Image (cartoon, rainbow, N blue to C red; front, side, top):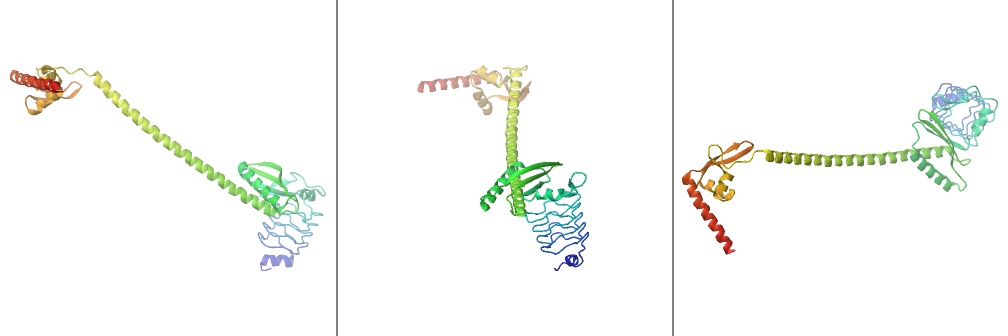
Length: 333
């Protein structure tokens, strides 16, 4: 053994408060060793000799304790969360006043008092063909069901008679759930636990991505609807402006043919000489009639024309010519 704490443990049998997390102690001879309050998280103790070992208050989270004889071992106060045991793990003669099934001294067994004679070994004999899945942030049941179905298929392929089923679901409060699975005898429970956890985490990612895309789609839909609504509001606002303008035009006073100083409005002059307003504008452009643009009440930029007797006479002749051309054009057609 190259690791100094491990060498010291094997030589002296003393490992109180020492850290062996993740180390390989496979096949170690530790009869009568003292590992009180030792950190043995994920430590490989398989095949080790642990008779009469003190494991009081030890941390055995995810430790591998396969093919181990625990005769006379004291596990009082130890944390046994997800430790890996199977039918080759012997609890005969092992004892404890109480243990914890979850970290941070949670899930004390028994809940109060101490184990009676033989109760501790009986408790873990019942766990030999089970795997505990611990969920600390609630359970996504969609991911759970998919992961469990895949695990069942895999176990069935590896073992024709092998079956996986849910033995119990416990709500521990604060979002913590413990799901206990019945698994085939002598199956690799560590592998089952690891494969299920990995598949569950993958399914969580798939579901989160699905919801992310769905949320993104919904956000795009909302933005598109907002754009449509914005266009409709602008259209309505424009229509309202046009209607308001029409109302203003309809409400304004009609333009008279002549104003108070005797000048003709362009529409009034057109009616006076029996021509269109377009013809009248042409005469203004040619200089046959003078005038200027002025506002009149609600009317803006109105031509007011000065038409004296001489101008009127000329315009009457031009109006007669225009009428004659119009008549001739109709006859030719």
